[in-house]
Length: 512
Image 1 (cartoon, rainbow, N blue to C red):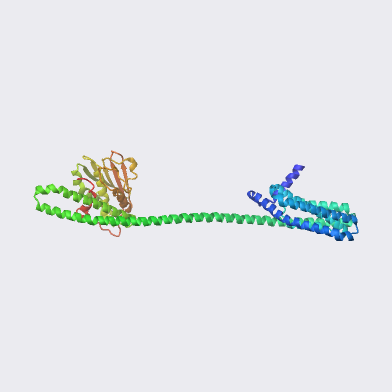
Image 2 (cartoon, helix red, strand yellow; image 1 turned 90 degrees about the vertical axis):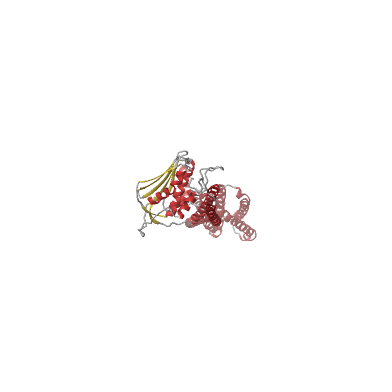
């Protein structure tokens, strides 16, 4: 029986908490306890004052006019007991309440209300005997229902206790049946009215608590979002600042290399012009034997001037590529003829170094749109590297074929090859296969990076297959497309001065 009653109380108790999330219930109980405590403190002081005033009236007024000595003594006793009780309770609440646990705090508050209701009932019995009215208990129950936040169990227990105890007390002291019936009706109406008011008060408090929590959670969420936004703004600001600084640094670098390259090219052109003039005059002025003795020195001047010219051109082109100003001038040409002409133009130089060079193609003619000067430069660079790293009696094979709408140009050698760990980085800037301080082959490490940029500008790709001491194969893949607005095919010949200069510049790193 007791377990059923306990289960019923739990069901009633937790039915009020369905709308409160479990993680917020401790805060909910703490807030109720805090509110009730803050309301009990002034109420306790008010009751002390009321009892003190009633005691003064008992000794000054009621003692002289009281017709019933027994009623007077009962009222006096209740006023003294009430004064002492509320003084003791107020002291305990002020000095010891905060030290108690949450459950003890709730128990103390409910006990205070119960004892206050019982005290009002005893006062009401005196007023009924004297005036025929039970105003104190009515006022106390109404005040309790409105003034305090009570859950369903507490309000049923408090008002039910008051209802039962008050009716039992009335039956023991009041003999008139009519008076008992009237008091029973009054107390019944008062019970339901107080339960209703207390329920409304509690419901309003729960709704306010939930709304406050929602607002608090929203404020916290907004705070988190604001902090996250500030963090992202800070990160983006820093990133933007760094990007701007990087852009400024890149501008300075581009400007520096451009100016440096131009400053290189001007004196180099003067040196080349002077070398050619000196070579021409000495050749005509000196005997053949004397000229031969200084010809090699003149050749070194020319070769190293071309090497400086190549470095300057690479630096200029690198800055133009970075700045996005390295454009293409496309025209329709026979790519087979272009590749074959380039190979034939270097054949004598390659064979003079004891290296065999072969051009092989599966098609005799293939018209496509390319920037001839840049494709020429890319192929010459690959041939220069092949010659540089291929020993005597080696072989360089240049192949061209078409497959699935793409043109493939392969430059393959049987030279020293490239270590496998370097094949992924070989197209990066300033990367060289021979990186020793006493390397046997000259170069700046910019050529293949520029070749890759040229091929990518054409919409193609370049890759390498290589292994150490097993040779290398560079494969260019270009999309096969033709300029439709220009159906003419431009003629190509590798015989002009510009082509010869490019050949001399690209092959200037190779010692002769």
